[in-house]
Length: 290
Picture 1 (cartoon, rainbow, N blue to C red):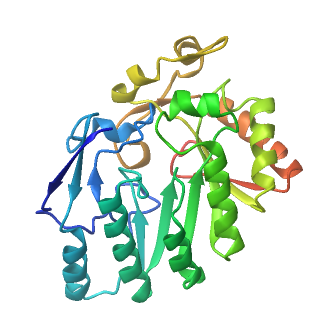
Picture 2: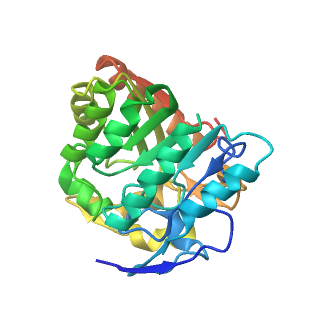
């Protein structure tokens, strides 16, 4: 387990994300660093990242949030958890601060958008159930195979726990859906893999899902040099990751599969999803050339 270091945040707790689709709203990250160590995570290349074995917890975030909300002339409308770390990281002091931050926002009629790869604690479900129209949760799910999940997301919650979280959210009336991101060519975007995923998702009652392909920056290429059975990331990436986009999703240059590849595969995946009663939507800001 990574070392947890408490520090007092000097900058604002409410920040503007660089993602074009979220830039008009605010985001909150209670930590720098993340215990899940997903191999594709580009946040590990941020200057603020403390390293793989260290997590910085900003212990004064809650008090800063209250102060910043009081000072704002224009009312907050939406806050996103989180762009650079897992919001429901299983660290008691982080979860306690997260709960109070979300409660404060919901009590002030602020809409919260959450992206998670975790089991969601019961007290959060109880909180969300009181504000069903103010919460949207995307649960990260790209495979139904826990062996593949462990390969790509070593410390994240097992597939079964995420499916249970998705089902529980839907049962209490929360707008929740799987986020199939990042899809990885010839590993999680095959017909058999994607159909198996859609089959287990459909059992939760979910009828919508968001999808997008893995993009590569220099910082996360080395972490992804993995192999699963006959599939090799190195061999696949040499053939498929040959298309560069500048100023991608808010900044920087990335390598992604060609537009033709993505267009053809999205059409195939959309048909599979429809066969399971799921409407698939494409992340537009991550596919600017389509």
